[in-house]
Length: 149
Image (cartoon, rainbow, N blue to C red):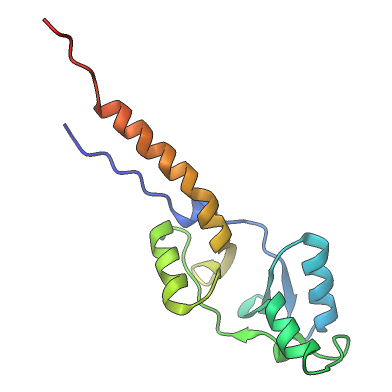
């Protein structure tokens, strides 16, 4: 009997829809995007190159608490530069471990230098019931009651 292993990958649970801003865009535009789409972060680009990420917390700490004008402050002044990234073929376990190690909750997903998605800790938590379902199916498949003779 072989052991069947089901591994969820980043591409299984990531969001393909990534909201972005250009590094020179005003923070107010990023805030509008966050609110309009009910998301917690926005990826910052310089043309097509990933250069940073802005979270709601960044806006609160780096703009509002400092009394900066969101209409005049560019995204590059607020973003966390050089965001931690992951590839779409990495496992969910790898993504979770990376988030813990780097103390982040959002990972832009990059393949061959191109932004292809984003995965968050919430996405990973939501994937857990799926993993539990797979384990239950594996247990059922392996447990075949023997007939009593």
